[in-house]
Image (cartoon, rainbow, N blue to C red; front, side, top):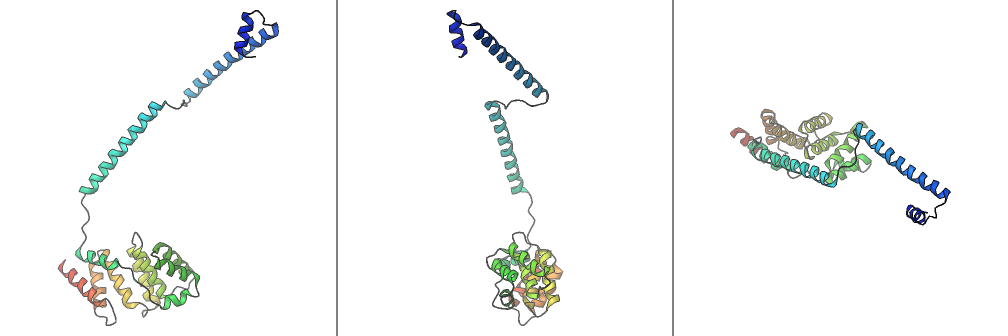
Length: 236
């Protein structure tokens, strides 16, 4: 029996004593629940916990932060447009052009080793797919195994050179390791890419010394490019 039915029976004078007691109990419980709810709300408010703000308030906060974010983006764009950009030297610009086309490995020592070494094979496959970060990771595993050869270090240097954020110092270290391992493997290519690293690092003296070696090497395929870079450096 609901509250409305209680009132209808009371109006008709048909409410029994037990029903009167039940009605009174229900009313007391409702009053007690209301007071308890109010007490809990006051306690939570003291502790800094309140109900979710109305939709209008949330909308205002969202609009406020959206406007602030838009202002920050606009300021960043203006700063990017007018902030002085570091100048790229002509030799560096020319070096970047030479780095646009990645080095292609021919059928040689790396492919021969890759047939029997899973990490070398994965490194070569990733390199062919231009996934240079993954290729470098596999070559590091080869190095950790203590089986790295000159060709592995040369390929590692290229990976560090071609990855999205080039690591020129790391590439130079890898090329130096390739020379220490075997001076006859990719010797001209190692010199050529080392010279490009020095150029991108702004080390003109080291770049000129290595480029001179490339230009004087009868077996180098980059003689003409090295001579052009040397002339560009002289004009800077």
